[in-house]
Length: 384
Ligand code: SF4
Image 1 (tube, rainbow, N blue to C red):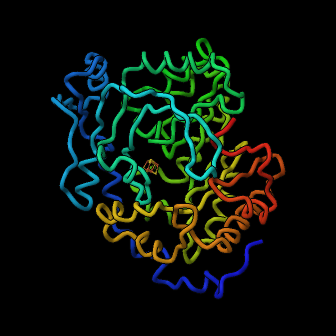
Image 2 (spheres, rainbow, N blue to C red; image 1 turned 60 degrees about the vertical axis):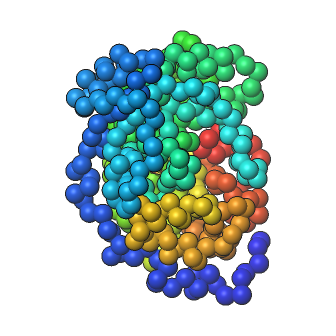
């Protein structure tokens, strides 16, 4: 059990460090804006007809570009609009499938499949602002033939079964703009015939699932929803469907035979966190019975703050960051506070039975131990 700091961190964090109710700076109007206003495509791409067909079906303008768009000089919400109100369609030249390696080994070495770079939602804490700082335009790669060849090869490779799952949610939200790309049903239905030993993992905040309900998924696709309290959703997860809408979507895909997992991540400390996260767990079980719930706290990289402040200069996260401690290359809540918050959520989940796997995301072993969780035979969100 970690030692207590000199003072209780929950007392150290005064109101100025909480998510303030008045910080709902981006009102509901933004939710009425379409996520994507136009599609862009690069002239030199191989699948021009596919780009045109996508734009035609979605009834969106398609703008052809000679070269990759450069970083824009905007600031604030105009910057987010310039980066995330468009969707760039292009070829992926790098491999679609790559192994994820956590820099300090706090995560399984899972495989990611990059169908999207970046996202069209506007979560203030999104680490992709940092990841894609030099190419911030939300992108979908449409040379699917190369992707499907790689999936077939991956399926035949001698990779341990527990890692034979391709994570589509590491570098973007794979369902956020599926109503435009209609890509999910193509890849899901590809798997049973062409890669029967491999599963797909969709990690999403979207409720855009109607297109995949009738698909022959062969039990090979897992749909994992990232979920949070109403306060976090309203203040930090702009233009995403509400937690209730996500849970309703989870119920729909579960009924369609998909395995459903949930992530409660990022857990954020604020004035009513205890009541809100407890109610969130109760709300989950009114809709759905997930096989796994993985929990993680708000943990920005050192470099993320400047990218948040460029886009959301009033963000409550900037105040929260000041109260965090450096640990493992990230800023995190003090471990006693993490244990307190995770413990509260775990106890509530346990009330709903012992068959649900509970895991922590990128946490060190003492925290698992302090919470009575077993890291052996890891069953977290991203492994099979
Ligand atoms: S849904 Fe995920 S990828 Fe999209 S903006 Fe939010 S945190 Fe980023």
